View 1 (cartoon, rainbow, N blue to C red):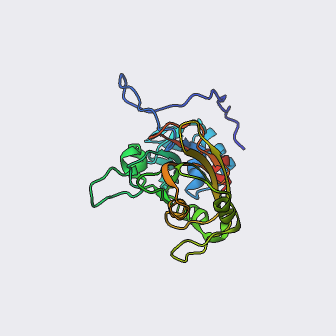
View 2: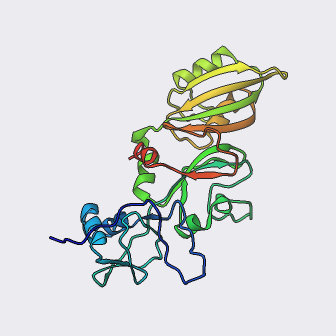
View 3: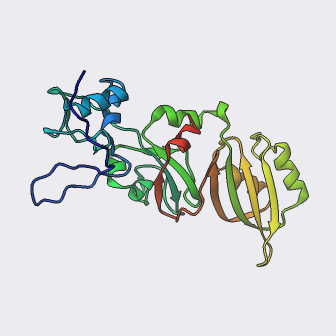
Length: 267
């Protein structure tokens, strides 16, 4: 049993650096607590990591560290009693508000802007990629991650993760069209669709309407094909929700990391 007094938690993050040189602030998404990093490397439990840190067994970048809440980055060198840990690339999860005229791929042969251009350097280094797609002229909620299992759960048809869209159209939205969509319409090319939720309200400026559509499947360009069969011209198509995750007030072209609770919704 160790009798050495453990330092009080101040909540302050310590960063090693040469005297007079400002320490680099950790990224909010790539950084993690020291005790969590040790546990994630498979060395021991997080509680045991706390004990090792408190008792002076842990160094970060060759400097003893006694604060379990110290934020560390993937490039930081963590050692326990001189044994340096092999650390795994942390998983990252983002919600992006994709603008129009941006491609949902990491590379485009035609040289068009891709979602890669909207990502911070840390996300590009971690090789995050889009979960599903929005077409070139569509906008709204898009998830990105480097966690393949998590992404596969979202995209697998058996999970039927609902996706909600706001669609501004020109043309007459008939009761017959709404009923077809709710019942499960068959596209003009013979493709059968699952029933979808839909409602419509007219807009003040001319013959325009705003549709709210909730899909439970992922047919390519499904809403555009549905509206084309209903003689409706799409003026704007925006995805506003994926499962329980709403786009909210996130500005176009911006992204934010998901919280642990939001990640767990799709786990």
